[in-house]
Length: 540
Image (cartoon, rainbow, N blue to C red; front, top):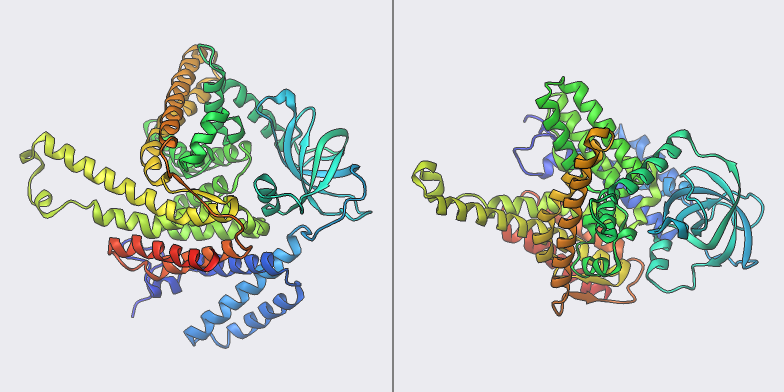
């Protein structure tokens, strides 16, 4: 029998094809190993020894498919567990010696506040080898000029432990591996400067922020919404709109994700075709430009995932083999965990990957089936159908596909937001259906405006593009506030166990892969819902 092609997009993700999908066999065991160490803090020696033993037995057992797969999974689990243990920052509780400390800190990420004169917020790791804080990760609220990522600074401020603080921001920070908070931090000196590229990214981010707020009229909140959309900085969103987007489950529209990367990639591909540029050179230049944009905006997990997926899909097309999106997603997950294994505990990483997996293996296939033209449409020539019939058919397909995709993403994300933040928006299914399509025009206008801002003759026109985008976003904010006024839009669930999040991830991945061969839309959409109810019954 011929070997199945894992990159063939014409067939479903059958078990036989899954067996020949290296991206999934690499990503899933590695992810499970990282999650296991994050949950139980396993010493690195034991899992590393198990991984070495499994790899040593893999070649003698390669002829036995089931045994070979078990050994491969075991090796991945061991490597993931050991790699996470070696790379992660200490997470145990630590007693703060003095409330005011001077620490050497390497800045991992930092962004100015909505009003830059109020300082900046960020995260870093303590580099002092003497004392109990070495390698401890801490969240920082600083004063003065926002530093670039990668700089090592001498900071002084009020130090406190995050262990005793309740949920909310403290829970998110603990999920990032932080155990300390440094408030009111002052920069006493630079121990090691950031790289030239990091400083350039920080300067470009600030310059782009100022430009996107430049409108033909006075509207600070509209400019802040546009800057938040293009830079992925939800802190810039005005409080009333932010609360409405949170309540309707649509705050993700302001995170740099597949929507931004796909839109920019499509625009650059269109421009390359119009300019008749060579395909290879245009693709490499486009990927480099997208990577630069991801770095300038802070390299969030969703942005990194979207860029790696875009690179995998482009590479597959460039070599004449179309890469299936689910394999590109697996490759993105594997690369992300190799570079940053502690990302497995990041709520943004979890939401991004599980939502996209649900779209690819549940919402997308269900939409293709339910939105497919019926027999009457297929047998009737387009010229013989009235304009009204064509519009009704198009509206039905668009509405059905939107509902399927929005429903799948909401089902995948609701348990995670419940576990991480204690609340989830059930109304997000319908809010996303309205607001996601509306988010494309301001994104496109912002992209064109940023491109035009580098040429003086186009400055005036570019400011009007900013104004149109800002006005559009204000309209979206008004819609979100109107939807947020509906009763019963959110669900709340407090005090979930720490293992609730990894349990849901494992349950959803197993559910989606087990039914990936199906084309029954009710099974595709209903089985994840049943898995969610089972999860709720176990953890509640």
